[in-house]
Image (cartoon, rainbow, N blue to C red):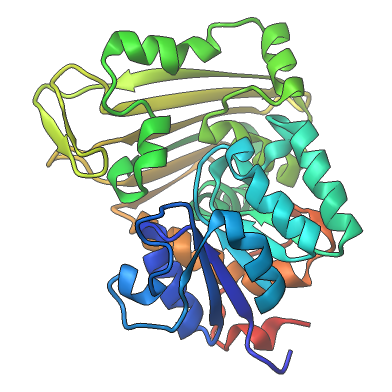
Length: 358
């Protein structure tokens, strides 16, 4: 590809600060920005993010279609919400206009096992208009490719265990709220945990209707099983509130989370497979105390057993760098809704992005 990769940033919160800079540093061109916040609409996106002015004014979401038609980007980075149906409008708009899109929406990493109807809807629209839609981010490597690489050096596997913790303060208010941060325990039980106190049939009904609320590892386990060629026979999840013995102030929520209230949650997903391999995975997202730090730990139990621990990863930066390094892969991929397990291994892009586009 001889010209620069043209990128529109959909959502101009904390993550955009990095993705926009990384795109430009990799030789891409930011040609548009979209947000729902009327307080920043019409302002220069660089100025809003504390960077130099770029001459790109933030467009309100209601005017996004017209702007996208005018600038004709090669890809749109969607960094807004965590649930698949919350990014439906953005992804369907891109699919309708034939614009490739990559999103940090965690459920979008492998939405087939939590919202198959919406996945099919977006897939069909993207195929019709010859573009690719996918989900990526931190999990692409640290909950996905890293794990399958370890598995590739293993003779036999009995169980895959994973645990990852992250500070919800780093990702914006939508993610913090999705983790129940700031709720008292009664509110957490009603608004977060109760969704899992159901039978398998009830869960399947919710999935088929697109009303299931998956934790992040729910979709990760689906991605891992698909990548490893495993056949899922059952999958369950449980959300457990995290608390602290002292009050913690959350800048993202702009409130003090009182001692004993939920600072976030631990979501545990257990998957059994026809091949006998069990996946037990947990993600812990909460407002951190002074003692907390990010940690990513995975164990592949078998012959041999291997454990890898990544302490204090720069999760936000890793998420954004992953998104940007994935851009040529998405543009090159076949049309439709294509999870990254089918796009191929993620590699560092030492050259400018356009040099990787076929």
